[in-house]
Length: 73
Image 1 (tube, rainbow, N blue to C red):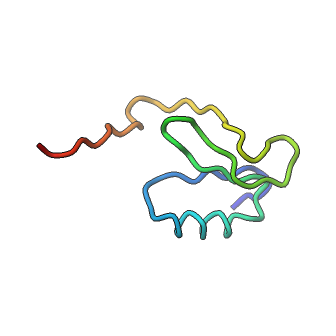
Image 2 (image 1 turned 60 degrees about the horizontal axis):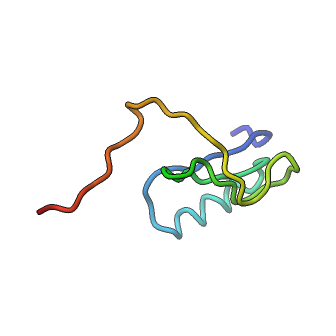
């Protein structure tokens, strides 16, 4: 892992897993969690280049975006 750059965490998982992953990525310059509605939300940082709570825009190709699940009728 190259800790000199930021790390982005994404995917479904329980909150305890995200907490563990953020903890394990602590050496990284910054850590962010991907939110489909916002982008990458910075949750930890060791640099003045980004701030906790800052949203980083990201452009994903359409095929990388999964359709939202709808409840069964």
